[in-house]
Length: 350
Image (cartoon, rainbow, N blue to C red; front, side, top):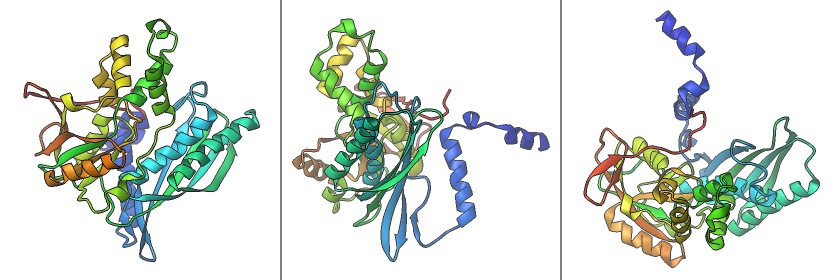
């Protein structure tokens, strides 16, 4: 046992992986603070929910690092500021909350032109104004290795918080918007030289680049669905499969995705066809779409889709929840067979 304990002590973050690390930290927080009546939702969800004077508030934080989350040559400063806010507001929406305010911390090396900082904040301010979010300031600091951005968002609930857990056997899985566009945009940036000879349609290219650089969080959805019966929710940030897996594991069920009903944009299909790429792979594992996946009882499905579509938010059924099986996510093929699905972005993965 002593040898095992020493081995565990030498284990690295890369060896344990991102989500076992998160689970480990959540357990430590639970042990340190125990059960506090002010905490409605603690660590481990899209955001935390705490009560202050009986008012539930939703809090989330996100970090972006240059050369980990973005390349400076790919992200104009306006888009970088916009996306920093978008990521956190998406977490707020996934909890069923309305955004109220945000803070931004920006780490700079010091040789950036002032125009870079002005454009960064212009992007952040633009999205805040579009979503009714107050940008209240933040922090600036010196960075020794690239640009660092940290965003904090605060939201308010008008009802019960949506959780990753709560999906029930028989539930229908609904998805807003389309998936895979952002991953396609990233692929275009990574293969800029190689795709010059493909004569890709410019409108399709610009659509996917825009989805990657300026995602629009679904901040209107919680108010639209305030009277709907939402059993579980999560935003699609790391990929449809891996985020669906998180919902399934937290709920103690298996999620079945209909592979012939994935919502793919015409832009993605066009680029995938000309590039010889499987469009479903971008949709399933790409991430950064910041759409919402909802688990709802079957009688609610049509009503929820109609409400969202009337607000010009596309929504469709993409799967169902079944009893727990050995794999948390299954792909349902048109011939009636199923296959386990894996993949998505994880920090510290080899």
